[in-house]
Length: 234
Image 1 (cartoon, rainbow, N blue to C red):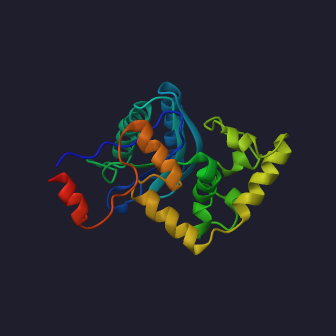
Image 2: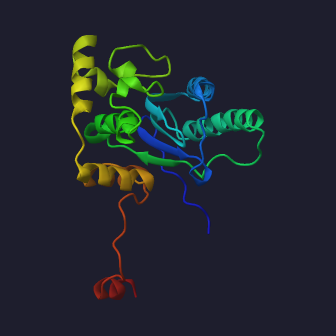
């Protein structure tokens, strides 16, 4: 059976997850992280993808990014994989694949979920128990959004700029938002949708996408069609 084509919408934020094969470690030291981020920055510029947030965990990555067209995101991920996997295999004297199949991509309803996804990504190390303060974790975009250090990889989204009229106001509003704990229900919904690569947004947003791209976005109803529909189709 042919694989379903990824849903990619130009100029719309996408949440991307890439895992190590069999959940193996994909970043063993600081050099690995620095090289990956450097190649990610180069690829984002080359293929015109705006990266808004990221975190590198030991065995997976999260990105929040907006491609300028429908092919740039895939090319960016392929380009990074080509360079990084080659580096990793050579450095650690290994062969074969590093990634667990295809990366997962979810189109994001920016108005309702952009800031939520930023916080979800950047608080990942805290939820994993690696640090108690997201600033203590060096391999995420949190320090950029908190105003501690500028990250050349990051392209600020208009919704981030809309948090305040000055850098201080934006940074304070962002850190205050991220510090608010997600409920178990919110985390459960995010995990389920993002790990499956589904669209994250309201039903209205998803219906709008369906009309725009002429492709099903909302999940189909389970079970057989009603008898009325079967009769109409006969």
